[in-house]
Amino acid sequence: MRRSTTTALGLSALCTALALTGCAGQADSAGSSASAQRGSSTPTASVPLSSTQLSQRLLNESDLGTGYTRKPESPRRNDDVTVIGCPALEKLGGDTATGSGLDFARKAKASFTYTGSNTSEVSEELYSDSPATLSTGISKVFDAMLSCPSYQVASGSTVVDMGTEKSAAPDLGDEQWSQLLTFSAGGQRGVVKQTAIRTGNLLVIVSGSPGLVDTHLGKALVKVRTAH
Image 1 (cartoon, rainbow, N blue to C red):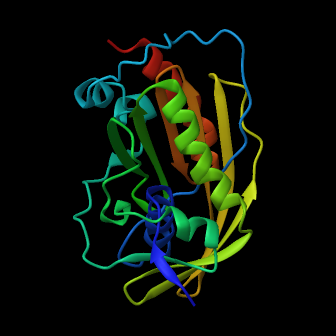
Image 2: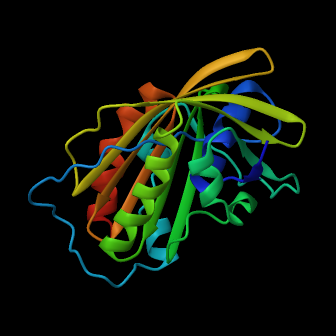
């Protein structure tokens, strides 16, 4: 059985899943469902924003409301993160299992727990590049994940059974992707939702507990568009 380093999006999914199961690590979900929306308010300039500018556009505790605590950035682990049983994801591979993120020009990320619970988390990732690069890059990853309704992701001695299902994405921005990712590991089962919105030269990805993703996605997009 061939195993290879997973993509950044798969890593995020693993990170959220492992965190929610109480194992060492984290995971996010991913999905694919692109559709266009008329009249985005974000300029489609091809020049990427700086990482500092992206960080200023991330949600914070005051944006989210009472009960949210920002998680410190997890140290990089030496264990390889691998995909088992999904050839499309295996082909994407690369060095993104180190936590270096998707292969876009600029990035920023923040993760939060809700009411101190390990089972309620939400994270936001922001990327900036040319609109075409963002659209092509994220579509490849999401399409690869949707091509495998079930597969496994391994990190060290932990193996997570994963499932993916397309989810309806809100009609926001220029393109939208959304997916529910189910996981089972260490006797724990759960669901992680990930919704991605491209608006001009910015890509917003919100992942975590489905209810929290639905609650805060709109806030994330508003801040991305209005922050200076």
